[in-house]
Length: 98
Image (tube, rainbow, N blue to C red; front, side):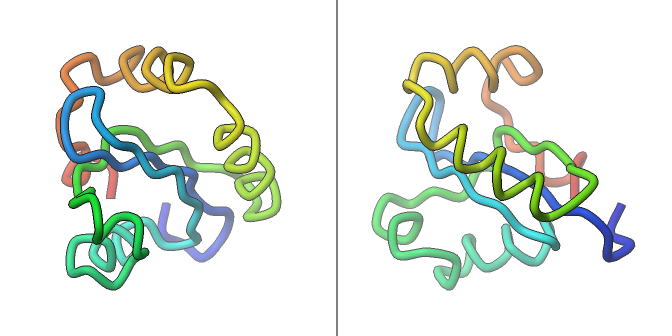
């Protein structure tokens, strides 16, 4: 899906039901690599977030940005349900998604 169209909305975390970061990107693999090397965001670097626990591809980057903004307003518990619907153990999904 890295054909230059669309984008990704994703959530990374440090551990099961730990701190979470919701982000959006056109290139998921490159963005997660940035987070893991400390170049992604200050928040992720400060809290040691590196585990990709949820990601969803969207047809347009504009749709992804809108979805990211909605998710950022969600309660933590709602995000837990979203993540655990497809990843109940909060495994790192990077190898299977990116």
